[in-house]
Structure formats: C-alpha cells, structure tokens
Length: 96
Image 1 (cartoon, one colour):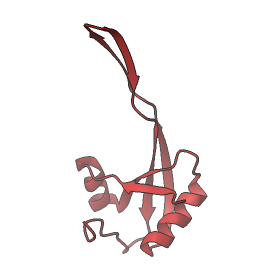
Image 2 (tube, rainbow, N blue to C red):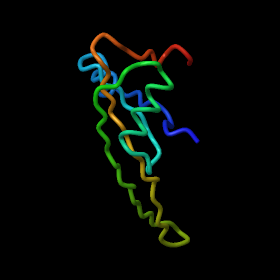
Image 3 (cartoon, rainbow, N blue to C red):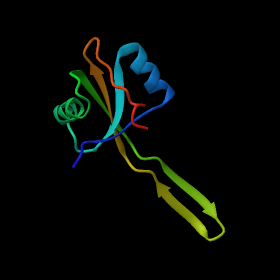
Image 4 (tube, rainbow, N blue to C red):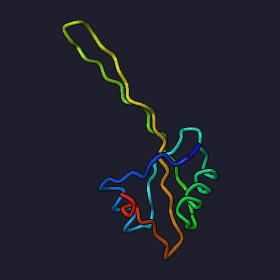
C-alpha cells in the first residue's frame, strides 16, 4: 500500500518547486507527516527537511434536471508539500 498517490503538477506547484525546492503530492488521507517523509525519501532517494499537509474538503454540487434534483460531491483529498534539503531535487518529468 503506497502512501504517495501522485505528484501534483500545476502552475503554482511548479513555481513552488523552482523557487523554494518544495514539491506537492496527493497522499492517502490517513497518512501522517512521518509516513509521508519516509515514503518520499524511499521513492525518490532524497532527504526531506519539512512536510506540510492540507486536507481538501469535497466540493458539493446540486443539479436541477428534467428528472429531478441530483446531488453529488467530489472526493476528499490530502495534499503534502514536501521541502527538500538544499541542493537536492526531484525530476517529476523523467518517467512520463
């Protein structure tokens, strides 16, 4: 069971990785900071200085259709922002 789900590659995350050496990952919702740190170090072979986590709540939507009202929601996600040691980096585009 892997803790890291996928790296998040957006404009904001890419700018943060270039400026501050911080990388963003989607992780399992039950994972804690120590587990995330060990998973990143094992997967990419780097040393992690700091881990920050964000719980993103699900978005709820209501649609009014011909057949009635439909309610839906997206999944809740946990994001981890991982700061690496000085001089280290992760190449996220190498295995695409």
